[in-house]
Image (cartoon, rainbow, N blue to C red; front, side, top):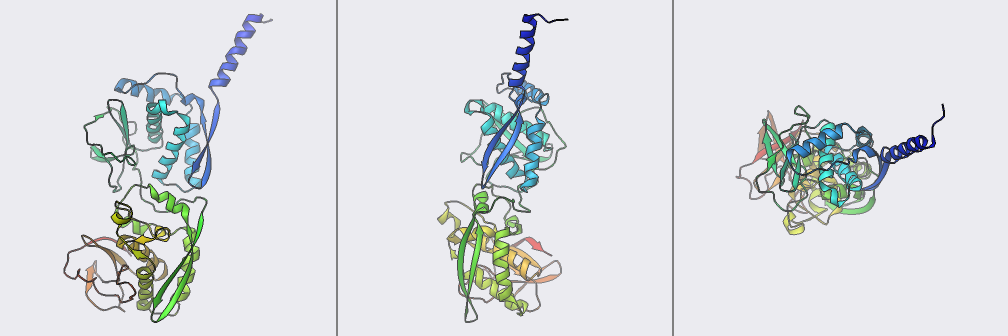
Length: 391
C-alpha cells in the first residue's frame, strides 16, 4: 500500500518535531578548577506554565516525574563520585548546571527542578513560599550557622536557597503541603574528605625557630581548596579540625616535618609543632581581616596572610594526628580555641576527660615560644568545654 503525499508529509513532520523536542543535550560548567560536562534530556524543559501556588507547583513536580530526568540525575551522581563531592558541593554543581539550563526569566522553574532532583537523590526536602519567592530546604543533622531553618515532624531543615544570601529571612512562609521523600536521608555539609579537583599549586615558604635552630619549610598549597572554602557555609567549629589535608599539602608538608621530628621524644615533637604554628603565621582576628567570622580548615592557613586561634588549632590538631598520633581534645573557651594532648611526658595543670589527662598545647601563642603544658595566660580560671576529641 502506498502512502499519499499528504500523509507522508505529516509523518515526517511529526518525526522532525519529536527529534527537536525530545533529545539529549549537554552543557559545560566551569566548576572551580574543572570543566565538567553534564547531559540532560530536553523533556525536563516542560512547556506547562507554573506559578507560586500549591496546586501549580505540585502539578509541576508530578509532570517532572514523567520526564526523562534520570539522564541529568545519573550524570550528576557520576560526577559526585568521580570528584569526591559531598552533598553541599554536589548541590552547588547542580545549581550551576540549572543556571545554564534555565534563563533568568525561569527562576521558578529552576528552583522547582532543583527541589525535584534533590528529592530524587534521596534527600528529605521541603518547599516554602511567599509572594513570588520559593525556598528549598533539606533535612540535615549537621550543625550549620547563619542560615534560616525550619522544623517539621521533629526534623531540622536547612534553607539551601538562602545560604549565600546576605539579607536575612525573617518573615513567615507558607510550607508546601507535600513531602516528596519523608524518610529521606540527611544532607551533609561536613567535609570528611576534600574534593578531588584539579589542583592549582602555589609555592609558600615558612621559617620558625625551635631550640636555637631555625627551620625552613617549602610548601605546595592547593589554591583550588581555598576557592572551594571561600563561599562554603559555616559549620560546627570542631568539624573544621577534622577535615584532612589536601594531597598537595600532605605530600609537601608532612615529609619535611617528619624529618624534623625524627628521633625526638613526644614532648619535643609537640613543642616543635607548636613552634611552627605559633611563629609561621601572623595573628589577626577574622572580623579585622574578613569583616565577619571565617573559620578555616588546616589547608586554608597557607593561603592567607593572617590566621587566628581556631585556624591554628585546626592545623596543629591535624599535624599531631598525622605525625605524633596521641590522644587529643579540642578545648573551647568563650573566646579562644586550643588543643589538649594526652602524654606522660608533659607536666602542668591537666584536663581530665574520659579517663585520660590532657595537657594544653596551645597552637596560637606565645609567639616565638615552644613552651607547652600550661593554660594560656589569662585562661587559667576560665570555664571551657570539650567540643571534640581524637582517640
